[in-house]
Structure formats: structure tokens, C-alpha cells
Length: 564
Image 1 (tube, rainbow, N blue to C red):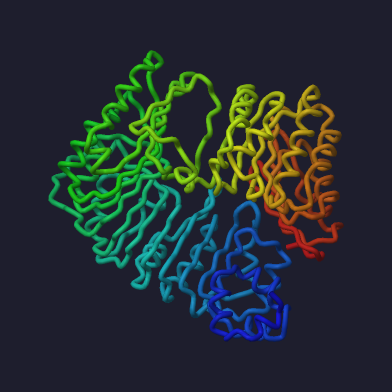
Image 2 (cartoon, rainbow, N blue to C red):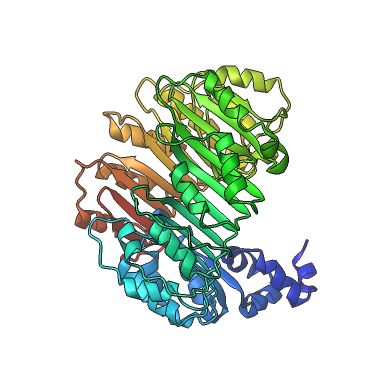
């Protein structure tokens, strides 16, 4: 379609089109297509500014051309790709200028800047707030009362918190809070859980990590949260006795999801027990999903897997709850993976192990739809891949993980000959935007490793972020670094890499000019002279923002000289 065609569309249609595009696409790719587009981008007032992984020149440009009152959603990030962004933003704007903001996300923010934003939140009309704070050694004091007032602000309906446990304990939750959705990546006690249920009368969905098992206080079940409809435990330790206490307080749940780890040493994950728990405590439950990694004793017998799965083959699980349940037993690590289908987590570890024992309460084959929720896939390459690839090559089945965009590959030896063929059969490599490689660059494996990574890069043309970690650093570090840099393709904009000395850092910044950000990890014994490094950055032809932590340097790059 040509620009004249779009010029004939009503402006309301263009606005609707912009609603489904990110600000960078609108302002960099579409703004200058025609005069009509240029004018429309100026009058459009529903911009979503998501600066999570933006290149520094684009950050400056977008901030300059769009009035702050036209922005309704803002994401600022001090994560690896954009360290120093929040400080830069506050140097360019007063947050109070964003008068129509409905959603605010602050990633890896320091306490100093969090206090600034907390004051803004109190007087805003925000409906959604997400905050994660930095993990640093020398922490500044957070003003808990200020943050408490901010998150209890009357307009906020959705809150996502990832803060230090100490800060969490100091928060004061307001009575009759307006929150409908609450998520926090923290461990809380039963007492805190009860407090949330009692004071959040509008809460519908609660997501948390886990309940502290050391809280041994006895509470009567006089508090019942009838309004809560969804309860989610994610990435924590699941203990059935603690879980039973929680759901006794939430009888109106229609949705329950468990993801995390467990242990047969202190919990039972028996289907009969769970069936009884749901039928006696959760009569309204409509959907139950779980994905659990369960540790077993070293003398655990594989035949117990079939006994476990049999407990989920009752009419309750198959007909009433409609739960398709699979159990994998990994003999080498003494671990059970028990999960419902479709997969309910965004992360999945694909195990290549001929000794894996699997059983399920259904007879159909696992298909693409079962894995559609998975976005991050982790694979360890082993020699077994050569045999599995031969079997898959004889099958015409489509890729299993079709929505994965984040791939992690681990390989501590020689790359299996069929590794690329295997990867192509389980995921769509062309969709990958982030790749993490933990590989071996020993002299005897260097040629094989480089060849296979190069072939992989040829298949991942949409790759933007690369995390590269080697198990063993060669003695000839500069030769190794030159080899690595020679295979990093121009489409990669964000690089995270382990370095051995300052020469590695300089070589990467001088030779990989297509990068917009780099994170350098280094060993504890490596000493980086900050003053010398800043002096070196000043010789580059690009903007350089430098931030350092205990064992890492973060550089956010642009295209003009400007150190701050």
C-alpha cells in the first residue's frame, strides 16, 4: 500500500492504527512518510512510551518531538540495556508534565528516584503502576511512608511490585484500597496475606511468590475473602500445608495457578489429596493450572511416577477440572516435573535425556497449542540430540514452540553435529529476538563452536540481544575476543559478555559499532580504572553513558560525543 492510500483514511482510523504500534515505529518509521502522517503524529494523544530497550539517539529524539501531555503510558528502565535512563529522563522532564498518564512502569529504579516518582503518583490519575527496585550493596533509605501513600492512591487499580523484602515489610497498606490486581515478587507471611485480604476489598487477582513457612502463628479462619477470584503463586517454593491455609481464606476462587519448586521431603503432591482439598475448600474453582519442579529422595523409584499420575486419572481431574496432566521424571537429577497442559508458564526447560520417564493422564500427543504460552526456552545440547534429530527428521510435525522469542543454549563441550537441525525442529529460529549462549571456547573446541554459532546467527536474522558466556576463558584472551567479535552480526544491538581485561572492553566498543548498549561482566580479581575508562569513552564518536556495579560495567551508546 502506498502513502496516498493512507492519506485518504479518516484520522480516527490512523489513530486506531497507532494504538497498536510502539512509539518508535510511529515516530521513526511512519512520521516522515507523508505530510498527513507528520501532522497526525503531532495530534495523536495516546502514545505508549516504552523505553525498555530503546537506542539512546531515538530516546532523545522521541522525548524532543512529542508533548508530554500526549503520552498515556510510560516505561522507564535502568536495566542492563539502558542503565542511566531514569536519571537522563528526569534531567529532560519534570514528571509532573505528564498530566494524562494512565500507566507507569519503573524498572530497576534506585530509591532516590523512586521517592521522586512516589510524590508524583500521589497526585496523579494513574490506573496502573509497576515498580522494580535495584539490588545493590550500598542501598539508600527508601521512604516507606511515601511509597505506602503512593501505592494506596485512590485511582490505582493495578499494582506490580518487586522490591526488597525489608521495604515490603515496612509498607503500610491502606484500608479500603481500590486495587483490583496486585502482584509482588516477594515472600510474605500468613499474617500479611490475611492483612491484604482484609483491607483490599476490591481485589480480584493476587499474584505472589510464596508464603513464609516459618510463620507458625495460629489463626482462626474468621476472615474470608469472598471477592478474590484468582490466586497465583509463581517462582516460589510450594508447600501443600501452607497452600491449604491460604485457600481456606479464599473460598470464592475460580482460578488457581501454581508454578515453582517443591519437595517430597515435606509435601505430598498426590492428586487424591488435591482433589479433596479443592472439593472441600474451593467449590467455585473452574480452572487449576500448575508447573512444578519437585525434588525427590535419591532412592526414589521410577515406578512411583505411574502411581503419582494414577491419582490424577480420576473423573474429577479428567471430566470436572478438564486437566491434562503430565509427569516427567529426570533420573540423573532426581527431579519430577509435574505440569498441566497447556503449559501455564512463559519459561520452559526442554530436556534432552533418553533416561527421562514420562507419564500422563491423557492419550493424545502434545501439540503446538500446548506450548503457545512459552516465550523463553532453555536447552542444554548433548550428544543425544544427534539421535533425536534423526527421529524428528523423519517426521513432518511443525515446530513445537512456535511463540518462543527468547532462547537459552548451554553447551560445555563440542557442539552436536545435528544441533542446528534439532533447534529448527522445536522452535522458529527466525522469531528469536534474544539469545543467551553458555558455550566452551577452549582451544580444542574453538573452531567447532565458532562455526556452529555462525550458522545459528544465519538463522536468527531478527536477533537483537545476545548474552554470551564462556565456561573457560582462553589464555590468549585477545585472540578469543577478536574471534567472537568477528561472528557477531550487525542486527545485534544489545550485547552482554564476560571480559578478562580492559583491552577486551576497548576492542568491543571500537569494532562493534552497531551496538546500542553493552554489559561487561568481569571477574572479582579484575580491576577497572573508572577514570581511564571514561577517558577512553570520550574518544568514541558516540554518546556514552557509563554505569558500574560491583562486577559489571554498563554502557549505553549513541552517535554523538556526550559523557554524563
